[in-house]
Image (cartoon, rainbow, N blue to C red):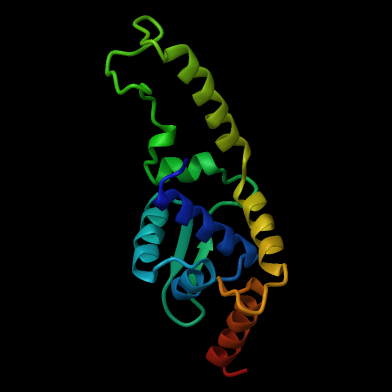
Length: 167
């Protein structure tokens, strides 16, 4: 399971990818993804230092992907967020565990971990973005609240850019 930081970063990156290269404000991402804005700002800062996103201040600024969403994987995100899922470690916490000095769980954990890493390396932010777009487009029940739809977000972004440029 991914850490909360990696999960939030993945959701935010999917939202950014869904914007198709158009800059989006951190507060808009936070609202769309249901992530606390101050926490998201820290995650975006980390992702920026790792070269995954680019940020631009000022009118027309915001956050964009620094890499193509089709080439950005969950593994890349987990590495950037220092997620334990990508770190080599013993399932039982034994520091000396290796192929040469295997703990009782080593064979099981090695095979299981290889499958996890394979999944993370094969799953792209582009795929996550496509899933999020489909999920957010499903009709909600009248009493159900949740993240803002990407359509509303895109409209807000377009209106905000028009207001900023005086159009």
